[in-house]
Image (tube, rainbow, N blue to C red; front, side, top):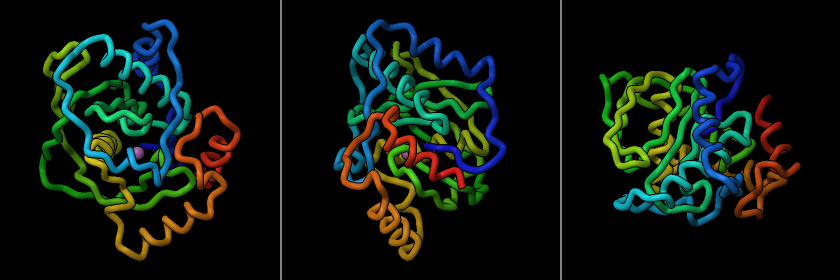
Length: 213
Ligand code: NI
């Protein structure tokens, strides 16, 4: 997920925990981000049953790639072309995490609209209704049971990333007219035609820069 608009806070001291995690392994790499129209974004991902160095490596790559993009607050495995049920998040609120085999449950029934963007759909965003509070449960890279509560942006992020692992994009939640318009804007984008892009490329950065308006 990508954060939009004003009020974007500077990385907190605690949120650098994610960076430290991502620095554990040698040979780390930032992976290309898969883009809209890439079939992997429509994949229903597979539960993780083996918690080994490959899963730790995947978590590491997700953090490394998310942190390569200034607006990134969450990233799911399909966004780097993988099909395991894993996502990472850092909404710059002091809580950084990764969740494997996530399950999201509502905390209350309040649903709020809010602007939402996605690192795989650069240059567009749309108001999307989500539960204001929710809890995500799952496992960490060592297979331990974990849970995070979220409210506001973090709750939105959990729901957005879980959607990714089910092959769902936030544009799917829009009314038909809005979705059609967003899809047309993407087809008209400079990046369209690429199934993935390295976040460090000028083309991807330009696409991101366009979102700030
Ligand atoms: Ni996304």
